[in-house]
Image (cartoon, rainbow, N blue to C red):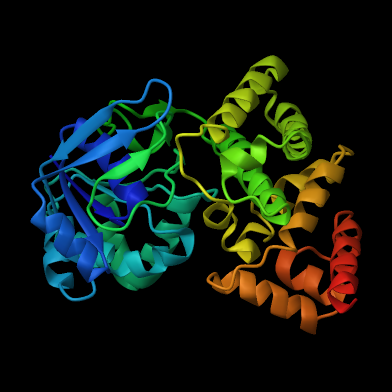
Length: 383
């Protein structure tokens, strides 16, 4: 069996690639970083170091890497004969992955089993997005190619902090979750022992996005506001911990009502997430977790997404709005979105900023509370 994975970075090697290896797949990594591709091809194995309680070292073998920017032909040949294609590149990069998949499907022997495609991204319906790109690029030829691939959405969760420079080993937390929708595969799901297959993926995706991602980003923005470097140190501050807990109480109330989750089970899940963030063995920083604030403040992401649904249902959102206010203060000269965020705050009025960044219409009940915190941030910048 063979798997082609787009994105040979830390998540690709330390999470998705590891589980595919444990499922018996030969691994072909695709990336656009020539030094990373060279480092992977120079190694015969790499180690995934799980740090924290219960962590063990795991060795990955049987892999190679391709630079898709210079050797697309070889990549397409690998896709044409692969069993599985996965991604961990970020939702905005999926449109650049799609042309390679279309070309691979065009070369694929129709007698082979359909290529099983899963986008493992921090986004709702990421595989659906990838499929839309594939269909658009294929155009009129899609009718002939459609039977050669199946697409399944996934929900992935593992904290992989920024790594030391050099080498291809990866440090991760012991916890992980990979949920995959069962339906598209019929009776032949991919063999990934560490994943679990579910009939309805939406509760898993939203539980993860609105608990893990919301909580992580909330910790980062309040931590940065307090001048704290590490995520674990930020949560060690009782005031910050209380703000993060309050935000997650609000997202949990939404999840329980919307998906009919057991409140006690969701509460246990929430505590598990906070315990993971407190792992002192993970050298994770507020700057890594807080980067790309514009994306994190967009309409269907970890703040506005749950807050909009919650306020529509008459549920409280004060703690989520407070977290968004902290996000508006996030400044990092090395992060393009953080720089752009501060530029927009200086150039747009509060209403224009709120509409452009959050995607909310002025009549939405969440629009006014966000516009209010934007106005307050702009006043502080002018003072």
